[in-house]
Image (cartoon, rainbow, N blue to C red):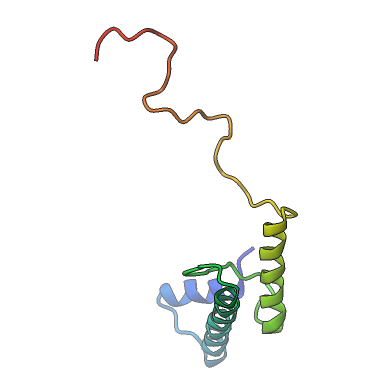
Length: 111
């Protein structure tokens, strides 16, 4: 399911003209996104985490949710990650042996 902001962006990239309400919605969403990033980065700087940049994927009700609530939820996720309560997704195969060159078990006969 696509977010309204992404639909409007696709519409604009497709060459269609956006209405004034649609332009206002996109501007409001982008401003809110940057504000959330700024507040979160300020908090992380205050905690001396060494975080250089931060991006996130807003949910469907992002524009309607109060800014401070979004920031607090992001901080809760960060705290849960530190405590081990939240395990981030892993996209690698944990069974994969990372050896270079791969070990075939055969004796080397030539280079």
